[in-house]
Image 1 (cartoon, rainbow, N blue to C red):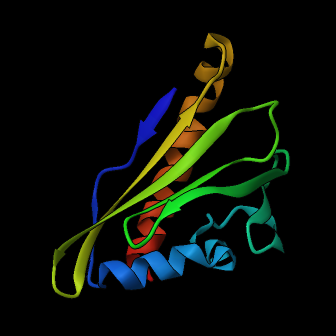
Image 2 (cartoon, rainbow, N blue to C red; image 1 turned 60 degrees about the horizontal axis):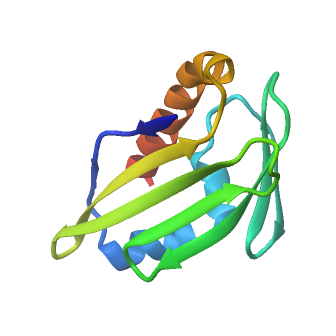
Length: 130
């Protein structure tokens, strides 16, 4: 299952946005209002929980300086990645696209597609406000 947000134009430079997303504690600022729990475990892992949902631990899987950060599930039970692609458009401006890629059976994909799409949209909207 693949979900991608529309590109968000930000009035910040590519390096600044990359540094913001590289600091995992900043993801708390991007979470939806329904966040029930957020905890940084270490510099490469954080845990979050939305109301009525199970806890999810994300860890940094890879990063390309100033252009991409890939987070993934720390558990193999629900394998997925959350990727932020950052592209400079002008000096002091960039575009960010968030994508979710997970391997789920058809039933699970059908159940989570709408909540994941809404979650990704909220992350992108909140990133545009930072």
